[in-house]
Length: 376
Image (cartoon, rainbow, N blue to C red; front, side, top):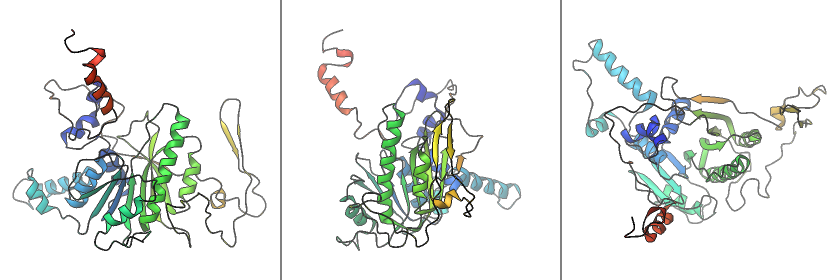
């Protein structure tokens, strides 16, 4: 979380500091939960590419501490105030301290949260943190041991007690070349999906960041193979100028006979079982018009097959949803700072920032802009 003037005027950046979040990305997960109810009946979660830990912090405060945020928290406050106005409560609701709030809320039992990232993270209450590579097969035993330390089997390749939800907010270091960034991001999402296939339970959920591009519908069609419902969401806290969005997959349903493993990930030399009566193929062609628009010819649909392109598996466009209350802050807008504003420090400073080596070299050189000690 930097200190540039743009960040200072970013409402979500300042709000994250005021409410104790490690990063403004926490509001993206909260707004996704408001739209899709991600945390309903969820007790076992895996957070991939978790650093600096804002999404894991949301999981800890919602699942372990029982706190309510967003629409759920607002409804709770409205309910208490309505009871007071109607005379059902004698005292007006007041702000409770942490102990009273813990007693009122009911944390869930048997919660297990595991966070994985290559970067180190500061500890969080009730969260098991691993430094591992989600693309390497050796990560699976570490994850299974963290999920079930008492019943861990070193020879197991899948979780004896699968998880309910797998989330990933990972993204590569963008280069500014959108085509390259979209490709690298799709490969990162593919790695997260392959790991999720090893630990998700039937009916589980998978949420991951994507970069929207011209051929992103192919990615949606591939996800539709193993999930009943696939949707794309854009939280209000995500800047509209950014190409990022989040794919929300619900109803995990692997094909019969499919066995997930990172040794031979999905799409790397393996094929899914072919149905006995595969749907008829439909020819499809793509061409670019002179004005730059893309035309897709879905082929002839008059030979008795109803022309259902989605069932034929050729092209499937996921529904797009905008998340977040329209009366909330606009992530692309800049707001005037109040006159009595006090600058707050980050909730959790970076533990291993990528620019750490540059700072050390600058310090050895004597300071910024090439200055040496004793110079003015």
